[in-house]
Amino acid sequence: MNTNTNTSAGAPRSGRNVVVVGTQWGDEGKGKLVDWLTESAQGVVRFHGGHNAGHTLVINGVKTALHLVPSGIMREGVTCYIGNGVVLSIAKLMEEVAGLEAAGVTVRERLRVSEACPLILPQQVFLDLAREAFRERAGSGKIGTTGRGIGPAYEDKVARRALRVQDLLHPERVASRLREQIELYNHTLQYLHAGDVSVPAELQAFVHRGQLQYEPILAEAKRQADWIKPMVADVSAEVNAAHRRGENLLFEGAQGALLDVDHGTYPYVTSSNCVAGNAAAGSGVGPSLLHYVLGITKAYCTRVGSGPFPTELDWETPGTPGYHMSTVGAEKGVTTGRARRCGWFDAALLKRSAQINGLTGLCITKLDVLDGLDKVQICVGYQQPNGQQLDMLPMGANEIQACEPIYEVLDGWSESTVGVTQYDKLPINARKYLERIEQVCGVPIAAVSTSPDRDHTILRHQPFQCQV
Image 1: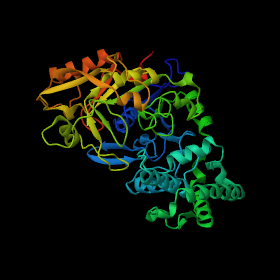
Image 2: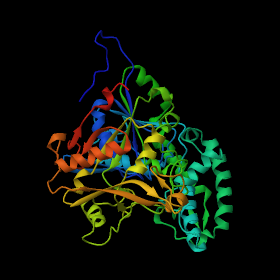
Image 3: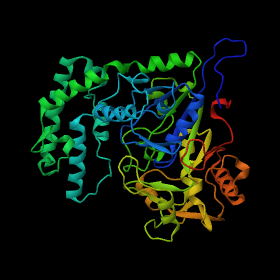
Image 4: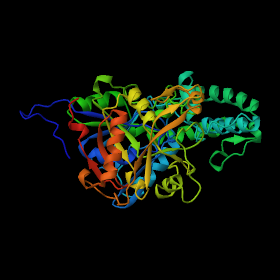
């Protein structure tokens, strides 16, 4: 699958760039596809989110979970970039790198971290936990955050009070800005009655009676500065230079498009833009350098946490299709371990994702999970309380909550699709299912994943070679 980065005359040409995004609520299997596609890439760029994301790779039967390090790290020789759109917990990055290096993966020599990444330090994590506890006590209901400080870190960025990676290289700057930030946070924590919040072990050195402790947090920031300094880079400049050298780059999204803060099921969303267009802003390249957008979607739907889910099934009762998806698909969140809610494939939802991402092609994952179901269903639109029918997911949680799905029922298949690598070897009903998805959504299927393993993938067209 390797692609040549030089013209036939030997003169260098600009590389081809592919953006990989989730099209549902995350957990679509992006990590495997990024890892698989990097056979044709020389660099992988993570452009938003934080360690609330989780990408699982299975290579030769060995499972690896990544949260911050781009999935291309499992390919020797691939440079990995963490772009400015990522909110960065250096503490969690240190843990992840240590685990990879213990497994024999070369990481720090190939990892470049943007100097403009906003930092997640203990204060953001504790505020996140305190807010969720306050909402629960007040009876207003949790948002369902992962409790990792992602939202507060993005708030600090937008409010222009964030500490960024580059600040760590200037101790006096860190000391001053950190003191101001902690004073502000402690006022908020007092209002939230944070003294009643259970403090996890990893935060106990930084919190006392619901108040943040400046000196321990400053010492932690200095420790992190020493560790990360060799990897700090002007990622925007380096990524653009790699493109000019003719390198193929893959831009790796986290979460899913329906968790986008602008276009998702607001307010049950994450705090960043998850759509393909943010690959430009979150890494420092121009949008004209995003040549192909590959949308990753499960062959059914899942969602972790709160929020509307029109096609949700009963996924806890044995013998039901939802339970089949949950158990066969091993549907637990990579980051939190929470059970994922399961439901039928929602083509009307995917039409919204195709629109907001400008999808060039689709990759359908976990097709094998549907093996053995007598019937499979596709949601093709929604019935609203006023009798109106919609063929695309509306905007906002309240509007979506009122939607009743309209289904098409197709015959299932009893044959196994596990490990199939040729499209014409799939069961006929599996092909009919995929082709109906393609027709309703209006986006061609570029690839199909038939197991978590890297090599169990059907390629219909190569994104790095498509001229669109």
